[in-house]
Amino acid sequence: MQVLQTIAQMRAARPGAGDLGLVPTMGYLHAGHLSLVERAKAECGAVAVSIFVNPTQFGPGEDLSRYPRDLPRDLGMLEAAGVDLVFAPEPSEIYPPGFATEIRVGGVTDVLEGAVRPGHFAGVATVVAKLFNIVQPTRAYFGQKDAQQSVVIRKLVADLDLPVEIVVAPTVREADGLALSSRNSYLTPEQRAAAPAIFRALTAARVLFEGGERDAEAVRQAMRATIAAEPDMRIDYVSVADPETLRELSTVDRAALASMAVRLGATRLIDNLLLGGEAAGR
Ligand code: PAF
Image (tube, rainbow, N blue to C red; front, side, top):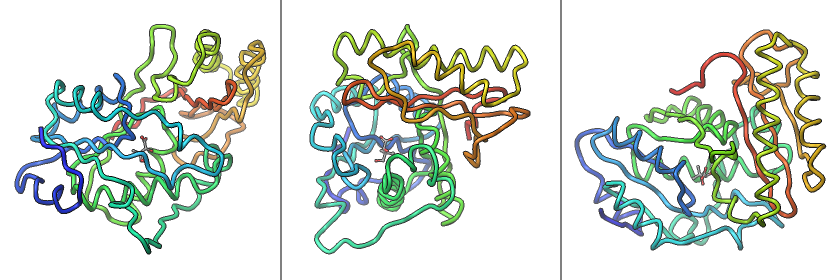
């Protein structure tokens, strides 16, 4: 496994022929990331993983400075997983002095995470476009847990004609349903015990939908009620939206994305489930 820190090193190491899968990450890896690596290994001749805590996607007062980092541990996991290339640049390599460009994807970034975290998706779109230019992957792998991020990246790729295929893989969960996230490491034992309420709320939405409920507000209300039973949880948003436009639905008469963001103390967690239809894998 080669570990590359600079853009020049990464470009020189990219295999010239054959397809390359890229798993972009911010490190502090978990089984969710490894499932993306496995998928990439099954589908591509070589696999690269990027590890970069991207400062531009964190807003003022967010968790950039305390975001968990452990590069030696991550490299051990990636070596064991059989990854070929790891790109782990310093922030100054990606954003040198004078850097002044930002990619803003319109429309789908105005709602949900984009509404609560202004500028977040411009940071994501900009760094992902840079990673695609630097690594030049054939395919790039993202998790369904960050559903809106995947929608934004698909739009970025379509609008800018970027020659990369986007693959979105299912969310990996703990046995009690909590979606794996590097941010779960912030939770106190009490908060960790409360956190599966998020999956219970999403499951309540799915059960209602599968039982024939088509009133989107009734589905949202069932999610809110599950979270309201948790004294330490605060809702940022609860949504039942079109999975592509991310616009809220009034009637769930087609596949829908049930999603939510909650705060447990200082930790913010997001999760989602698709109601009807299959996850858009590709
Ligand atoms: O999902 C993430 O970890 C990040 O948003 C990404 C895609 C690596 C961009 O920094």
